[in-house]
Image 1: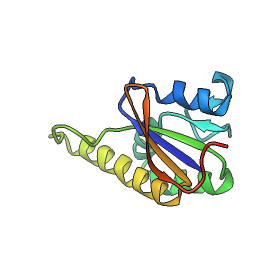
Image 2 (image 1 turned 180 degrees about the vertical axis):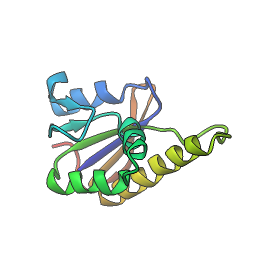
Image 3 (image 1 turned 45 degrees about the vertical axis):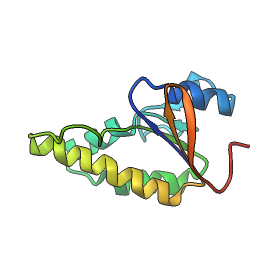
Image 4 (image 1 turned 45 degrees about the horizontal axis):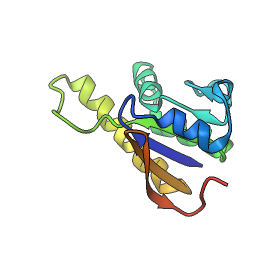
Amino acid sequence: MKLVIGGAGQGKLAYVLERTGLGPEDVTYTLGTPKPIVCGLSGIVRRALDRDRDPVAEVLAYAGLHPDTVFLCDEVGCGVVPANPRERAWREAVGRLCCALAERAELVERVFCGLPMTLKEERGWK
């Protein structure tokens, strides 16, 4: 499993598509239909919380069933702490999920301005 993080609009998906040779048809934004790339983890977390589900458990279960998945997540933990308790809970859940995935991932990269920075590498892209 691989995890790619970075701010919104920083080129994560373009980078992953280039590295893997996959196309947009290989990307999903839900955990419903297994595809090689799961994009938008922050949205998946929000939807799980809206259903009173544990997003970390759901994504880790998916990762266990699909160990070659590349997960992409927007960084949401920087900046001003939201005053809204629901927004704080969402942001904290995204952070917990990224920590859990990073611990298990063979590769963790951060993409900033389209440039990758390797944070962890046990096995690369090939």
